[in-house]
Image 1 (spheres, rainbow, N blue to C red):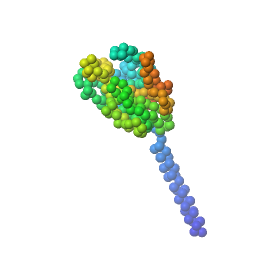
Image 2 (cartoon, rainbow, N blue to C red):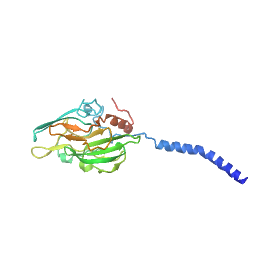
Image 3 (cartoon, rainbow, N blue to C red):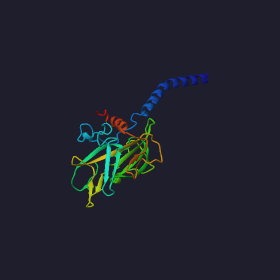
Image 4 (tube, rainbow, N blue to C red):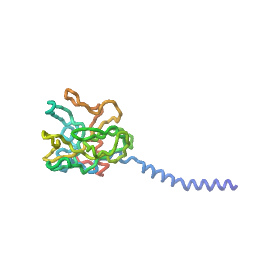
Length: 253
């Protein structure tokens, strides 16, 4: 009789506890819900956004429409080597800081930061273009998507990560860098002057498959052709999703 009573009290206890367990499980499921698979790679909105100072170079414009967007046509000439390189723009450029085109360029630094759009692993850190570096990350989002981002045109001294390290969503990778060259007097001068101002930017390059490969992400050939890895794609969808998740508002069209 005593055993039966104990069992009865135990069953009553379980019945009483069961709703609380359901609520707890629902809360845990809500906490683990993937609400923001990607975020925007900058802490603030770019200045080539709609209604901003450089919206004539809007990062959301159609492919090829302006120099900041994917597949805009590029011609680069080298007086030293007497060659002309023709290529398409492989990324979306996000303009950040502007400075007057004068003064000591070596003192110019970005006031903004570049951050990881989702969790991932650093594949490479190294020289990119015109005195700037790149950080390449293989990302895996909380909803299971995989892709690779090259965060280009970073200040080499600002980079906070190394090859092989894992990064968390929102982790600072570095700062945008100063695109520069040496003039005939061996002075450091900017190569990216727009509307009489020096512009800092993030070059945001996207490889859709997310797979590791021996194929280089980009490669210049002797016949002046500039080639890209086959799975390169427009990063617009990643940026637009991250924009909404980070700033709580839709992208203005």
